[in-house]
Image (tube, rainbow, N blue to C red; front, side, top):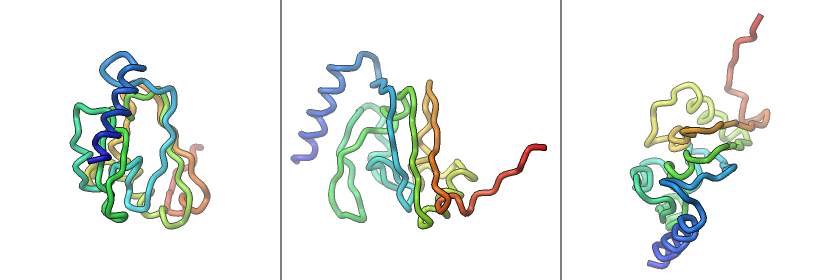
Length: 137
């Protein structure tokens, strides 16, 4: 498959550039889809189980085609991860993701947890409509 060759080729480029078990990007900017996917890591997809590879082809069910993506381990090795979420259509899943961080295969964004780095979320007003917070006194 063309996607497999492209993924292997890009992974080789990454491995030639980075030293160590995982690539150490300074910053990875991600988005979150309405189904809780990020990068091209989709709910229930095979790519969520990848433990060794850095970059893989992964099936996108809604588009009915293969996509190329960094793996969760490669993403989680970054120094900084930023997640950008916008739109009212993502409000429900965003609230679910931030309230109940234990449904990893159904909401892949929850698998993004930097091992030795920081993660920051950027939300617009519409995506944050279902979030609640307590004000400190």
